[in-house]
Image (cartoon, rainbow, N blue to C red; front, side):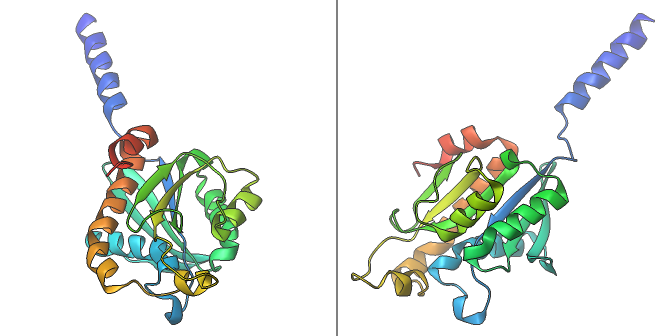
Length: 209
């Protein structure tokens, strides 16, 4: 009997060490649909998820409120979402897919562009205000709170007065384009870290790089 109890205890211990394959994370990369918006600064959320999908050989399907792909990494399941609602109504898509996949706010990560950060700077935060970003504003309004993680990708603010919209919806400069792949790769590492080592450790590891 003693041996049987030892075997059971060992099995339970091993089970505790295994990843929970039922755990899902929602990663929403914000952007606008349409050819005119492709690869613009405002669409960096789309581009990061597209790069991840290309590297992993997965495809997006057109679903309700957006294009969706499923990505598995180290026993974690990621639902990748590119909303089709346009940035200003991103909350509709995020809210729908959180409910459909039964994903709580603590396992939501939203990727957005940020004028306040220098180009290529990556800042992972556990919560916060919308900081003037209409996509985050929509999500905050529909969810009723701002208690979810967001990854801000710096796009800089190198534009003349009164030309902010044109800049945000514009293409990257040649210099920025050359550096973009490396920064996107780091953003992908942050997505993976969010689901595996957790928010706090991922922030500590990547926020100053």
